[in-house]
Length: 426
Image 1: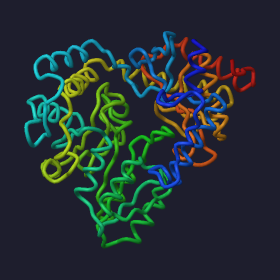
Image 2 (image 1 turned 180 degrees about the vertical axis):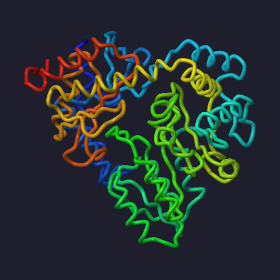
Image 3 (image 1 turned 90 degrees about the horizontal axis):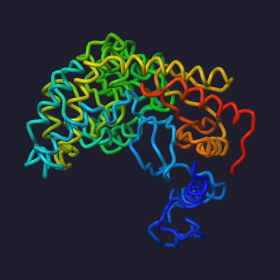
Image 4 (image 1 turned 45 degrees about the vertical axis):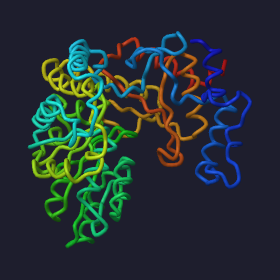
């Protein structure tokens, strides 16, 4: 590891600032940053820099797979979302390059104007077939997909009953729609039933993540569908961390739970995680998708997803069926990664997926472990409050199909040193 460059980055990660400038000094009385959230964040960033602990947004100098680099030195990545290890897969790369050669790097418009190409329609049909729905629509991001699905279909007279750990994009979508939000305890279907019983007669959206990105556990979807049907609610499942991960050929949470896809009104997700692309999707009935393509602002007023990304999505759908070994290896490696944490007597939470949290509790301890692992050439993501509850800060580790046995051994050795307080900052 290039310790000098790493130390320089952690001291001052934003090149727009002189090395000795305090970020908090940008908060000027009466200025645009004279608000409490900005003041708190900039003061927090200064505190992290004071300890040389800033590791967010490390600029990688090569493709983000299990092996990447920073400042000309190798890094072992243990927090990449590339669960299936498909970033750079030759078939997917070739399909993307071919699409760029034919359609260029952009479509030059929004989908309802000049932004639709044949490849969009083919990919949407293939994605719907993969998920078992009647139709699907591509969006600029998974975030946009959730904003579109909720804000176009629900409003101030409706109620959203959501898991307390639901993704932030769903909460923002409800805020945009003016929909009242009621939270049920995480994966607690008895509490969900109680809340649904208390709102009988109202138009209700139940929203859950298929896989929860901070804990790696899975929604009890079969039970949630039964409650949705009993109380006449609608159901949205965010499959961002499920597509490509759960179910046969990575078909998602419904397939994993043995639930008919039609029993989920809205399946949404990102295509930049297990799928080595970008953008997001909403899948559901043909009527819902047709309406969203004409009645949701993120679809109507955003540029279409680029040809190269679209082709990568389309080819990934073929690869994960043709080459099931990626999914099988990822699942085996998820077990290995959890075993590394558990065998060291550390806390891996309640995960049952490739997302394996290493719950450390204290925020400073979490920053320190992420920074010290970097000195060992291992890049992991620190996740502090408020992204997780106070006292639940963690390193969010991810297993992929590309991790090798020696990678887990290396991680285990480094974590053992940290656990035993054998490392100090260089």
